[in-house]
Length: 232
View (cartoon, rainbow, N blue to C red):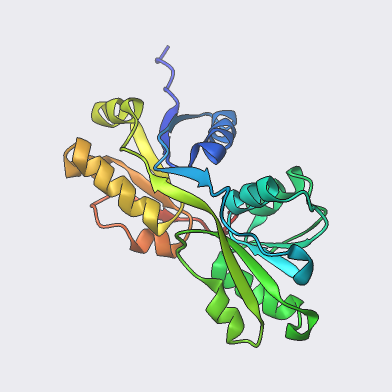
């Protein structure tokens, strides 16, 4: 009888707040997830939050934004316009009752808001982190909307790959890496080449959330795959 095939190792790089949930889903599908967060999330407790009563809806482009918002206010009845299904699900879990998902990325969300709302309905507020890949505010303002923004959390780079990840990569037991933003893609490549030979990437498939993530890569991966639908 042949020896059983070991689970396929996949490196999960998203922040710890979402990494374990992703790992659980991968284990349920027979994979061996290896957690190595590339970013650490800090809620900015002292960052100014506008009076939410003055806004028709809140644009949220990440689950981290939803968490930060929930920590800063007890209000749960405001209209939440979420970038994707994962962010929308997190909002509902935290008690928000009016939640809609654009089921896409920031650009898809802009188009969703344009189709769903009228600029005359009232002002919108973009709840965001200090660093974002795509800013929806100027795109919406170009369509006639009045949009304010507030940064409620910070995403700081981790010190590098986890010891477990480095050991697995060196042993060749990792088949792929999950990458969720252009920033995390660049951080992964810097961390990888800082710990191991660049040729290590040749044994990996880079699983990217969007074409923008794939475009940020520069190492010679075995393959690069882009998610057909965004669920962030």
